[in-house]
Each structure stands twice: as C-alpha cells, then as structure tokens.
Length: 375
Image: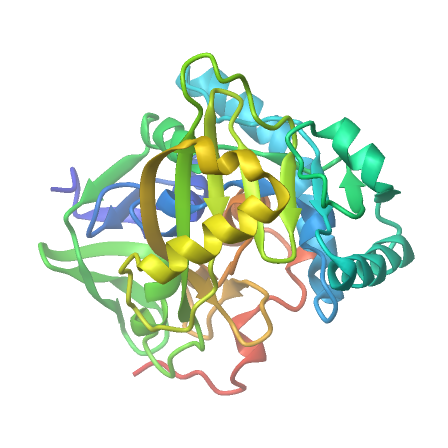
C-alpha cells in the first residue's frame, strides 16, 4: 500500500520509462509515487535487448526522430554512471559498437541504401568489406557479404537498470491497478485504483502498450506490437561470442559480455497476445544462424514475448495533455531503453513548470487529435 494518500505526482507504470521519470522528478523536489499492477519492469522492459543504437536504428521515413535518438544515446553514459553510484548496482551499460551485416546479395543492396541514408544524415557509419566484417567479429559466417560498422552504438541491460532504479528511494506500489485518472473537468485531482483513490497534483502515464486505456477523453493511438525474444548462453569454456551488437535485416544478436546472448525480435500485430510460438522461435534462430552459425550450439535459456507501445508515426508521446496536470510518456516503440534518460529529463522539466524544451517538439499528444477533451 502507498505510504500516503497525497503526492505531488503519481507515475502510472513501473517500467524503465516510468521509474526514470520518477527518479528525475524526485531529484527536483517532488513527492512521487509509482504504481503498477505487476512487478517493476514487468512489461516491455523485461523483454528488451537494450540496444542504444541511434545509428543502426535509423531507417527510411523515420529521419524526423533522429535528433531525439541521438540525445538519448548522448545522455546514457552520465545516466548510467549516476544511477550505478547511487544504487551500487550495475546497469549493464557498455560502449560496444554495432555491426549490421548482409548475408546475401539482396541484403547488400538494402544495406548499401541504408548506409547512404546514414551518411547523408551525418552519422558515423563505415562500410566494411566481407573480410573486414569477419576480422571484426570472428563468429560471423563465411557467407557474410559486407556490413555497416557503427562504433558509437552501445547497449545496456534493461532488467539490471530497472533493478537499480527500483532500489532507490522512489516509492513503488505494485499490485495496484489504475482504473481512471480523476479530474474536476479542467485539471487532474488524482487516480482511482484497485486500492482506493490517491490524490495528486499531476499524473504521468508511462504504462507502455496499456497507456491508451488511461486517457480521460479520446484514447491515444498507442497500440501493442508483439515481440518475441530469446536468451542464449555459452557453455562453460565456450568463450565470449560477440564483442559488438550484430544485426541483420531480420534479427539482432546482443552479447552481454558475460556469456549471455540476447536474440530478437519479431514484430507482430497481434493485439495483447504474449504467447511464445514455435514459429517465432524458429524464425529468430534461423535468421541468427545465417549470420552467426555458432548460435546453434548455445544453450537456450529463455524465450519470452512482450509488447512494445507503437504509434502511427513510430515516435513517442511525450508531453502535457489538454487536461492540466496530465503528462504522457509512452509510445516509445522499439527505443524505450535508448530514450529513457532523455524522456525522464523532459518529463521532470514539464512537471516542475520549466519552459518547453526543443527536444519535445513534435512529440505532444496533440499531434494525434486537435480536440482531446476529458470525459
């Protein structure tokens, strides 16, 4: 149960985004409660690979979001160092770089186009010949036909980061389902939960794929996008398989540096279904095997499915609602881990009444509906 019945702010969602927002808001002097119906990180944070990869995540049609992705990457080193010092726990942050590889002629053509886009945007991306790819990562298949090296991409361990955030002073109340954001018609007055009402001045909705149902008026177009992910592990004495993130047009392979290897992820429009399927597992293993045949010899430790929060333009929703006191921090699609530090900074600034920041431009919920009125 919450320790109080009144707070400056209530954050709905104890994932990486919600916990980071609460931490930064508390640092600015606000009393904050985080509520979640499950354990911290039970949603998308629990099944994310943790790639901090603005260069290799850049794709055609999504150039408008690049500035935010780069800001997220730039803030991660300080974010991780501060959190690790405060909590005494690791975040898994590693400056590892990423290598996107082609395994056939069609892949080469696709990656050549992608490399041209990256260079046109001023991103640090280097084209590697097949032999250079294999020198960079010895486990790569002989069939690799070229690739893109992004030295500045990195990774973090989302589960470890959630544990570090949850271990701090932030008050987190789990097993609490939010039924509604309460208001007086013009501004927030609290939240109605399965354990009663909690009064607050402001509410942050950071509930990932479940955010749309918490809108007081017209629902935001935030939808669940299913992703299946595998965790593999090297056998004793097997060595560390990969030094960098390895990606292909069909999968990614992330070595954690401790023998664990994360392999993902499918993209499925299946509503709120989180069933792990044999077909999904097969597709991931087959795609990874094309680039790194040794994955077939690794131990399969875990297979999970989670739900990313998607939006029509694949950009997050970060900003105030028309209902005064309601702030959105959701819709991060496949970049929730990357964008956690910058989202937390933006939301904390909004909660404390700071002037609008340029990075928040174009992220407001108002872009989806000119008239979002509270019900």
